[in-house]
Length: 397
Image (cartoon, rainbow, N blue to C red; front, side, top):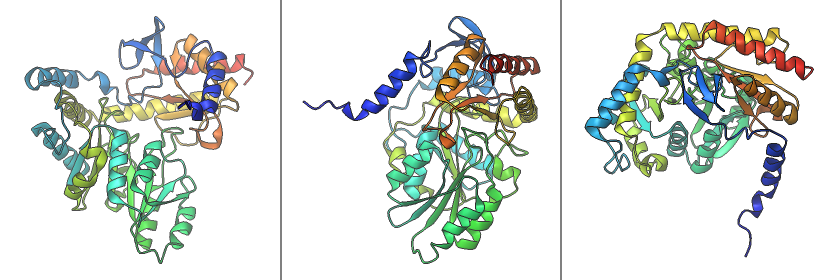
């Protein structure tokens, strides 16, 4: 019998080589319990959490916790069906209305995860007769949505309006739809997209533009609507997709738009049609976290201050970070062995970050990816920077 896993032999060898050289498996770190948004117990030790994407600290929102408990007690813990079967509760429609109002859009679809939001939106919007123009550093969920759609995929250089326009110009005789997809903040590097320039380009070339604001929702803009709000180009974005699992601290995803085709999307988006809907307690917690976010704009101010403090601190100790100051701060290293050793030393000294390895990283270089929170104190950030500096000196960096 043919070994069904034989096709993964190369992956197996790489995985075994990585785990053999590391005192712990970097892909199976267990946060035994959170003490607060910024501190958790890992390996029995209190550890600073700088790898959770919990940008506003709202995973610990008292309002969200209370809403979840009350709703679970009154409505149960699940829907047991998809949105087009028995899985649409009044709470789902209420959340969609609140998100549409927040984003100043006419329509909203809520998905069970952020991954499914990209998968379901992209595959519902385009097909084999259409063209997708994707930023080369797009998230895996965007590429998977492109595969599911069957559309022709053209990649343009990361954050490069000139390259995008050049590729669009070659499509002037294409009769199908053209959909550009970019992210607000890129999850690996923290780079911020020039969405305002992309809006100008898509308008000149008769294309549509979708922005994935997963890591910028709640983070950027005067009201937390993301990069498009910050760059004053919201009206030029046709579709905004994002997730609840970052700034709102729960789980789920959404697509908001002014285009009158959402009801059709609900009938042809397979990830929406064939997945159980979000449980009522998660919907309730998400709405409470959204209200918390809207009522506490000071969280965004504190988050930006903390992001600048961490970014400057890591550069001061001689480490290479991205050029943009955002809540994602990535330290670039040269070799996988170096990155694995550095990551282990950080954890042993009480700082947890994400270890990101090729081929999932830009330029195929390993990253130590930090995500800062509004909940971090200046002292916690300074402690993390000090540990980074000590480890860097140990490794001769």
